[in-house]
Amino acid sequence: MSSPHHGRHETGQNFLCDRRVIADIVDIVSRTTGPIIEVGAGDGALTLPMQRLGRPITAIELDGRRAARLARRTAGRTRVVEADFLRYRLPHAPHVVVGNLPFHLTTAMLRRLLHAPGWTDAVLLVQWEVARRRAAVGGATLMTAQWWPWFEFALARKVSADAFRPRPSVDGGLMTITRRVEPLVDDRDRRRYQAMVHQVFTGRGHGIAQILGRRIPRQWLLNNGIRPRALPRDLTAVQWVSLFEVFHQRPHPRNTE
Image 1 (cartoon, helix red, strand yellow):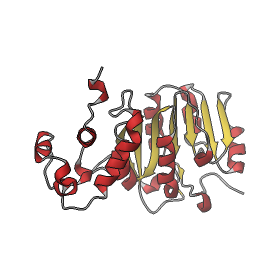
Image 2 (cartoon, one colour):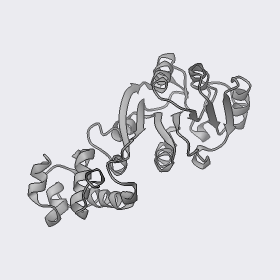
Image 3 (cartoon, rainbow, N blue to C red):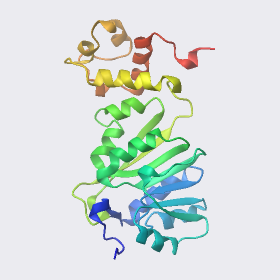
């Protein structure tokens, strides 16, 4: 039988047990508004403290025994659902997503989340290196660059592996994702924008100037403060948007009537 703080390796569970980290997560969540959907609730390390915020909580847990046990410990405004987050249908109404994600499923869960509607903020505990890369610390990843016009990624803090039971082999990282109220690129252009980012990230060359070739004038690089030998990961969200506008010779939607 499953017992508190002993993760099941087949589901990639590493339970958070550090009260200071839990308090930091609840504090970040307290600055958001709306119902909360928690991913991988486990034994309620985050669920129970978040109840003090007085907001509706839907706690998703894959392990049926843990879900049943947590349901007996929660208050009336908290609903525990036995489900796989990768198959769970998120609501269209505004909500906040919170979770200590299984490290081996982080990328799949992030992709699922970024494609989902409704949510306004996500507060996520993932591997440290993943958190850094998603927040573009030391350079943006392909995934971050593809979604920057619609979301802001930020790194909150590092979380020691000692904060989990069982102890994982790597540290964790607490990150936030916020949906932009005004996207930098029109939603109708998302596929074209993301295809362009993929094309640039996978293009050949020893710098952005070589990768882009004759398609983009050198003056554009100078005007946007980009060194010719800069790599795609070095571009900012605003520079990617500007590049997209040049690629397709279309004005920014906020500059049109």
